[in-house]
Length: 345
Ligand code: SF4
Image (cartoon, rainbow, N blue to C red; front, top):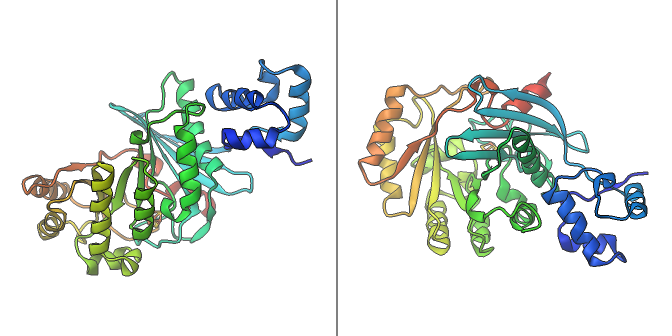
């Protein structure tokens, strides 16, 4: 018999599912699943034995199966390929920074957005992830870190998929993650990355959950951005920057603009000048990401000199910029690369 998975249910959903059991039982089970990471009813010592026996005939507590694990040589990055119940696979990347441990999770299986520099979109979108599956990615990383004596400090939804195209599941996952009976993670420790789905940025603003918004910009003008990112043909730069500015004003949270530096494509001083101009006056900073070569895509990384020049230009023209430290290029850390490789075999 197929047993229903309780992982990923909110307390209210657990109460409804387990009725007519008294509500305090749902609370105990939620604490066991989310606070203590218990995976079998036999280990729920605070439940009577006969109840444990009954529960395990009807339910299970399952996150995901580990299909593959890769560790970077410097030990700072670990990448997991996780198998889901229907056989789909998603990538999760654990990053050990000197300021804390972060996990980058996927929000969809594949992606329909078609960004030209990205491996995740090559086979299109397979399906959305559920809130439980996204939470499972985070728990997998959290448990792994706990096993090595660490803890999880932050979450970025920046892996495969466009999170705002999976809006309802994303919001459900974020609210559950924030609950005291779950990980109790502050919204401020969570970053949502979007390629620029403008109406959904407005919806996210209205949810009043102060997560950090990260907008993948990658070009300082509509012509180049539309060539790199098809979403720009639907929502141009002006409306995107307005939505970003509005998000920052309403939430008080500085927006991060991600900018992948592609050698010879968008990395000249002229591009930096135009970028500084369009971001001038925004509550924003820029994260420069030197392109990580992807076998399946033909772009080249920028030269070190171009990265330095670009960075220097922004910082001396009123735009706070950082260069993302390259992490895990030896474990295919760019989104979708491991999954694409395993699937192609
Ligand atoms: S960069 Fe993000 S939004 Fe664009 S295709 Fe890749 S996964 Fe999708």
